[in-house]
Image (cartoon, rainbow, N blue to C red; front, side, top):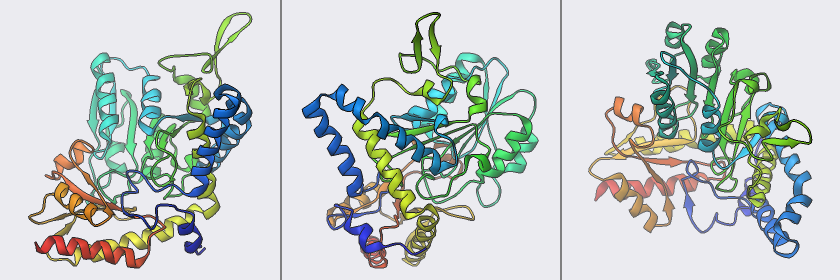
Length: 393
């Protein structure tokens, strides 16, 4: 299905002010998202924050339903969080480990997730092991299958790494974990909003994702999926009146849904904005978004690879919106600054974000340009021309 590109660009206030290729860091929000956030803040200003929140509660539950629909879940399996890392960390903290337990992770794991698992392992005596990759650089399901034994307590995967366009075989990894009865945590931070997601087909027990990237939602928002059948295996690290409502008799009772991970005090305006972003993406159609982004990313990789002195670093077979590259003789941070002076946003990714993969590949900092379905071919040309000029200096 073709996208109404003119309408989508017209609904993006920043589209003519900056050439934005940092959608993997944070995207330009569309007008309906801005409207939802601003309208609720205005209601808070005249009615009171608590009263405005009570009035907006049905809209928040509609947003929960939209989030569930986006990933093939049901509403009770969705908690809203402050970020992907926030939700992922809450879920991990709900697991218990003991000495000798094994945690198996992908080489491309997000640094924040690794740090959280390392802390859990240090406290319990568990060990973390890295699943080998196949020749194209993806986490290997076959290698994972050979590593499974009765001491494995978790398989964790970042579906689309932050340092390039590689797409890991999440569903295949999920099948191995499910067959072994091992919990499977999936970080979908770079996947949500650009790839179709069906948690049933993926076989994940937990999925975490932010709102600010390809969904084009507000910063400071995220969603956490916890499979209903897995819920009682997780004990959240803390409780409040929302996660464990007080009963007249018997004291607090832990929520029997993902709400046990959702704190009682939260930024209602931002969550309503996230709901608007999800509705917006679903209205366009994730399959249509995926098809357009794939074509644009391929076109950008081809343009950059044709520039003398430029190396494209993307691995994998099927690839995502993220395009990673380096320019010989130009530091990535310096290139980012040069492009910013021309009104072009890219980002720099380094070892601190995806430490295991960058170290394994002998890479330091790299440049990252992430496309959106909003881009035009002329905008890809403009970025390529700016990189060409930088490479010639």
